[in-house]
Length: 89
Image (spheres, rainbow, N blue to C red):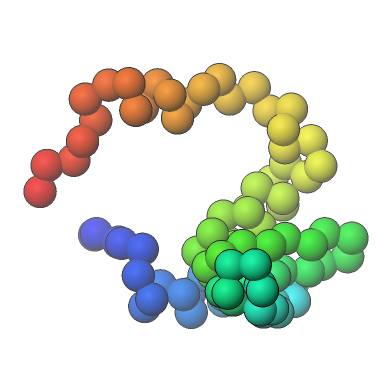
């Protein structure tokens, strides 16, 4: 299977967010002139620029809660970018 970020993945992302009992809203961002996506549940409000990013942030919130920044991840981003990790098609 191959899966890529594209508009045809938005509905499944929104489905997964709703399945986690979040209310999904949109709001116009006057600063960027783009539509922001918002997910709300209880005292949690999450903002993103796309449904896929919103889903990722919902997963982080659900899995780690308010202590998400305390997770000892190391610097995975730097580690991956510092090696020859380009995918050849």
